[in-house]
Image: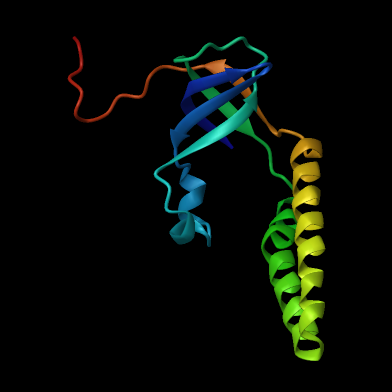
Length: 137
């Protein structure tokens, strides 16, 4: 998928590109939850784009995304149910949730560092023209 956006920040070899929500988001089941009008994409910047430039960003399909989303949302629920079950047996046993949440957080940080960026800035682009802007002839 390709999107056009404006570079808002440069950090090392990466450009943070802000763009309108892609058309594919309209069919996403989470679009109502997300409710963002724009997205910020961290993309590998091998063309040397600078802050303020309009660029085209290409993203690839990520096969591990459903697994990561399941971990992100289901693991805290599992920890809470486990803690509640432990609480019903012995109230002090609910403290097992604390080290489990710490482990969950540390694994999330590890995933964030190890999961590769799958977007890259592929070409400069022109600033999109809106209907409210006058065109020059």
